[in-house]
Amino acid sequence: MFQSLKMKPTPGSTRSLNDHFKKKSKKNVLWIIIGVVLLNSIGMSVVLPLLPFMVGKYLPAQQVVVGMGALLSVFAACTFFAAPVFGALSDRYGRKIILIISLLGSVIGYVLFGIGGALWILFLGRIIDGLTAGNITTLFAYISDSTEPKERAKWFGYIGAAMGIGKLGGPALGGLLGSINIALPFYITAGLIFLSGLAVYFLLPESLPVEKRTTHLTLNSFNTFSHFKDIFSLKEIKILLILGILFYAGLSIFQFNFIIFLKDIYKWGPAFIGGMLTIIGVCDILSRAVLLPWLLKHFNEKSIGIAGLIGLGIGLGLILASIYVHSIIIISLAVIFIISGEGLFDPTYNGKLSQSIDESKQGKLQGVNQSLQSANNMLMPIGAAAIYFYSPGTLYATASFILLAAVIMYAKYIPQTTMTQNSRDHV
Image (cartoon, rainbow, N blue to C red; front, side, top):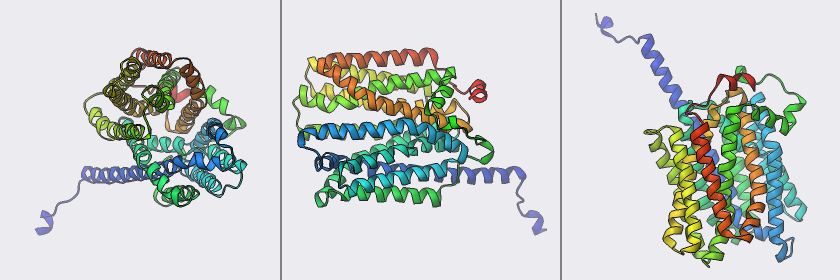
């Protein structure tokens, strides 16, 4: 009698329970990814205050800027060529092994920086790090593999927030450690990234099942431009990538010139500029980790993305206005609009990009996207500096028009749902 009163699980309830535990396990894995991003971001930003001093050990004072620019350009160039290849390799062999290789490459690069001894060793470290720079590409592909399409923008936002937290605290820690020993932050960075690699090896499962991987590699798999050709052959993805190029171009104008702008136009010193950079860091974290998840519950990704572009455009316009009407209020509002706009557009853009293609090509797509950003980092500082030298007003007017073009393109050509059967079949 009593046995007949016992609750027996139904097939449906068992399935629901299994789904619950699977979702919980997948969510825990995603938070591990966020932790890996945070460790990497702290590590990389720790060394930023020390770069001029490290380069200054091997170059005269007047050539330090040139040396730093060359190091950044070499890294960006190596990433440009390597990111699509590493992305394609992750489509073939899985995300985990490629992520570990990429992290180990960064460890070697920072250890070489710490050892130093000659300028060519610093360049060697940057080259090794750049040629194995598949970590962001693979992390984004991992998030795409592990989430439902509607959740991706939120998790891409969390990745950006984790990067923002690292950038906020890392430079201060780097300055403190560098006062003890200039090489110490580079070894600390190598150690943090090595810990990230251990976390990936022991804690992360492979996100791309064997049956969903690409089945073969050819010589073209190691040709960066063949990946560009494949991805840009798809109309929907091509339009999205062009939209991204416009966005990152407008944002880069702000990123690469804003400190110089404050110094030249407003005559601010390090204390005021440092305070403004703190505001930037706080806005970045709040917009991605707090504002974006709330908006995603009430609006679709396209509306949020357009709002982000408009916010960025308004911020750039306010900087233009501040040239003629000096005001700390206008500058502060400009920064809030720009950083919040970036925090809303960037994750939703990456979310829509990841929805435009299936799992077996996520790595290639993310690699091409990362490569385009590296090209932007190589070319925009030069172009923006030339226009800024001619006229700061012309530079920020140009940036505002670029964002206006991006808003029109997004509203007119980008549908709410970007995944197409054509995208699945023809890449």
